[in-house]
Length: 98
Image 1 (cartoon, rainbow, N blue to C red):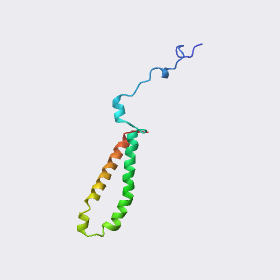
Image 2 (cartoon, helix red, strand yellow):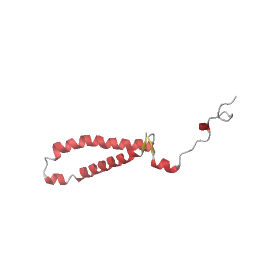
Image 3 (cartoon, one colour):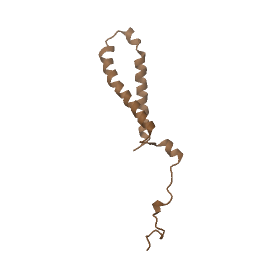
Image 4 (tube, rainbow, N blue to C red):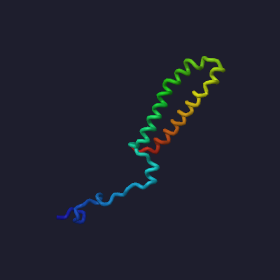
């Protein structure tokens, strides 16, 4: 009895499956990647930091004198790092497969 595929008993899709090339794996990041999970954890940690840092800055730092504010350059550096992380997150999300 013929199965419609030449009598060999196998489907055309069961023949040799093509594997992804190396360049495809570099461009598209799988959503199950351990690296991507760590990256998302860092981004969420930065967002969580912003939830507490921004209200604190509005409530207490703005009312200080200019001399005390000039000593707080580390806060500006932290905010810049978080902004860069958010921009990178946008780029990475464009390359992530779902």
